[in-house]
Image 1: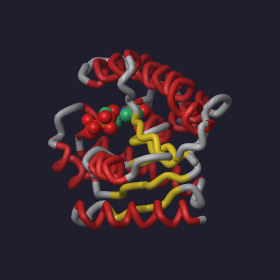
Image 2: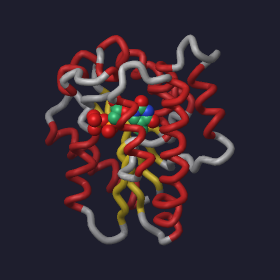
Image 3: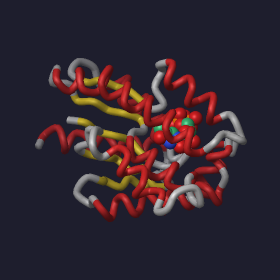
Length: 195
Ligand code: TYD
């Protein structure tokens, strides 16, 4: 089973991912995008550049995802592990769906189309939902992706994705305290594993 954690910056999903990783041992693989490979390094370098070309950036993220799939995700799933990824393909659909506005027509559909022939869709996606003001404030608005206006459009894209696939997305109220958010995520995960 492949479980992904998604949400705008400052939604607290990384905190939950870290707590889950502490608590769950054998049979779980914890991973994230951008990854810690050199592809991921290239992505992080691009995130830090204000003038980065958004199309070039899409394909850096996508290269990182392709490598992540073949090197980490697929072997772990083949070994029977539950894989929990902090960000995954929906981050591209939601974020680059905004960043590519004005560069390509229907950007979110374009980015989904680029992935569709070869990606491995998640089985379940925990969507950590928080308003963009709170998200930006928590994230400290340190990079170009962390501004309120940008994040509110990213959140709309996540909403759209959840509407397309309501059975895959489980919404978690990420305005709650970190303890409550974690407890909700644990409950959802336990329920899924019991099924
Ligand atoms: P992340 O490492 O999750 O952020 P943080 O620094 O808060 O831990 O992701 C870094 C940024 O990259 C974040 O603003 C979201 C953005 N991003 C995309 O735009 N597209 C993607 O495909 C991914 C994986 C991340």
